[in-house]
Length: 154
Image (cartoon, rainbow, N blue to C red; front, side, top):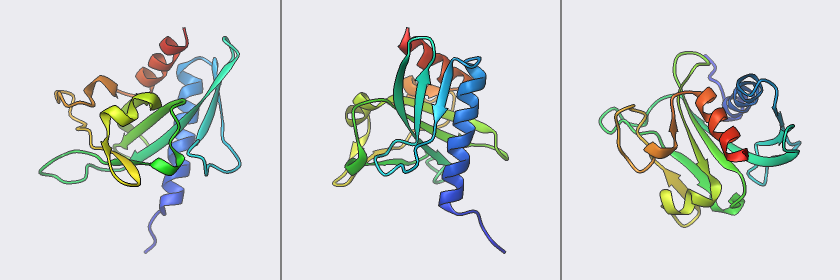
């Protein structure tokens, strides 16, 4: 039996986010996939209204890490870190549905994430009632994440 690779999962996540950004913004946001994402930019998003663009790094998981803790771990390599743009972290539910997402401005990442030698580590709880340090960034769905992006562009 074969399993989906991390590369496949990453590509799916990026395409789900790209489609959601276009749908939830009614076409205002136009995401582009770079030929190579070795700089930590998974999507370059163009805002048709303001004529500006910003990078988005997408991270995803398909389930919480440990049943006892119930958190989800997302790692951002320090080698590709830039203070520009956003981190959009996703927890998938059943199939391709997104159970929870977190939208973190990259300039805030060093202050909210755990800092390791070679990476930043985020371990948010996906529970709606959690009051962890990641709760201000938690979004119910990708539509809410899109609305937050649009508000930031205003």
